[in-house]
Image (cartoon, rainbow, N blue to C red; front, top):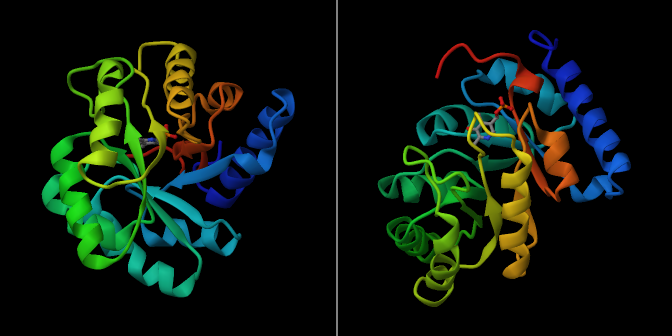
Length: 225
Ligand SMILES: *Cc1c(COP(=O)(O)O)cnc(C)c1O
């Protein structure tokens, strides 16, 4: 295991992605590894940056705000992805901090983001989260409402959506959820598919993932949250 060496974990996951790409006939450069550093301190992230990795995911605005401005200064080109639930009242900070937001999932958030994007002139790339398992406790648009929501993002809020994201239910085999997300994305001509985590990124790559979000396989087990 890579619990104490994130750089070793990074290299293992990079190799896993290359292997999956080869297995499934995908171009490895079409798959972006988002290294999920939530709950880990800057000291654990820094070696991964020093090893050359630049794309990271965080789940909490406050935590990202505390860790990332200093890291970004030291490592130009770092790209930060918001992958956690986002409250509308954090839209301003999120637009300031993140290059990509994976968790756009309701009109109130679309409206808040549109307002902050217009004010700041910053344009984070946007991905709509789909609740493929229709779990009540989970964020995301339910599959039957994606069409209407995407239309509202475009026509009502003037937002460009690049793709879709999902987190399959923990108790389900993930592949049917990845396949469903892929089908919905294709229907809308969306190119970005954010799916697959430490346990299932191989299956996600098989089913077309362009972004895999991998935390514990790089940084080790999380002890909090
Ligand atoms: C924490 C988290 C991940 C990473 O999960 P691991 O199992 O540690 O790889 C990926 N996506 C989201 C949305 C997360 O919250």
